[in-house]
Image (tube, rainbow, N blue to C red; front, side, top):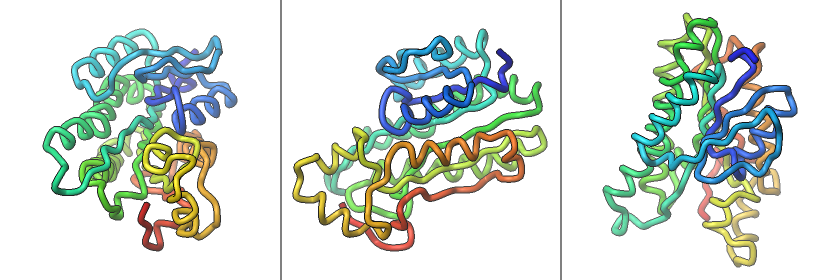
Amino acid sequence: MQSKNRVAITGGSSGIGLAAAQAFLDAGYEVINFSRRDCPIRSGRLTSVAVDLSNTEATREAAISMAASLPAATVVHCAGAIREKRIEEATLADLTELANLHLGAALSLVQANLSAMKQARYGRIVLISSRAVLGLSKRTAYSATKAGMLGLARSWALELAGDGITVNVIAPGPIADTEMFEEIIPAASTKMNAALKQVPVGRFGTPEDVARAVMFFADPKASFVTGQTLFVCGGTSIGSIAY
């Protein structure tokens, strides 16, 4: 299968990453998943690579090794972690870990596959950021490093536009049925109703809502859209939320 029909995705074992992996498989792509756990999807077109994406050296080695035999023309970086803490409790270690995960892993995956993209004069890079880039209490390390993705995308979009490679960002709002959502708002939490009232559309998002946006940016026909950030957030990006 040509690299144009192959996607390298992070965090494809659960949540948004899992929904995106399934969407790509349904569209006929070959999927390579990089995550700590094996992807539960069973398909002959899916390969899982076990790696801690906050470990920069391990991530770099895994990305290079896989790209040497199965280069991808689409890269989707979904993996993430929150580390919810007040300012007084936030640490430099938190910043370093999430910078490695949210920014370093994206860089390693793109660098490993960039040669194949440039050779094909085609590529799609999609970074999953967060509505929290606009500000959210107790998200020092998370908001800062997720906001860094916007800078990566805008810079890469300018640098790679002439090679037929687009780079875009999706910033999800509250997405239920994900481990990160349940970490902040457990299923039986009294915070659930209060948080729901802050979503203008009246419901939490689903991983599939975000996966549909991923597929838009990844579409070969979406060649005139680059350097953009799309908020898939139920309207929470135009108001104030706290959860």
